Length: 168
Image 1 (cartoon, rainbow, N blue to C red):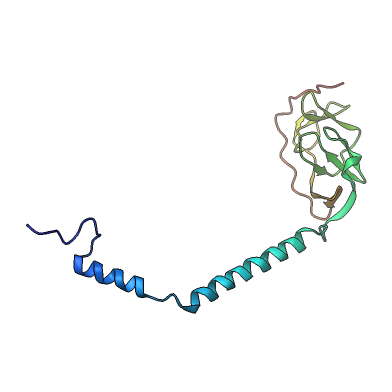
Image 2: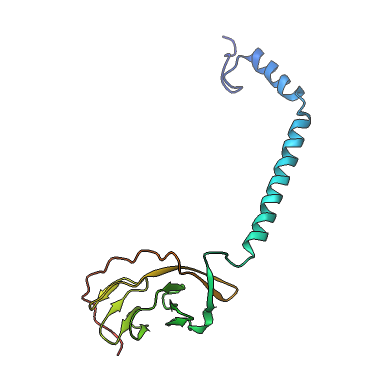
């Protein structure tokens, strides 16, 4: 019994496998591969340069500077210019200012007003009467808060409204 035509050498018969291996080894790659590699390198370099130039600028229209984000301490809420800012939940969130005095309660991780209204960090009303806060698109660049006041984000639907203020 002879050696099979397939097996460890692959699915080609012995004679075809030997011939195919010689063809692959003798094939020249040519200049096309070199030019394609150089072209891809240039494309990646140009894209990286554009990203660096565009990414290191302050945001443009419709964003406008509201003020320094440090005007509101980390873990608190307050006004930066004419924008209500929450920094209590680990991120910076901007809203159209609510009526009355509103402050951050670290014990409950919620916003609370003296009249009993309570909101979550995303502006959802969960206690008292009224409406959820209206979020604004915002970003922080080099310590300055930039806000888009022209196109507010839709307010979240009010929640259960059974939450009571946890800070007095």
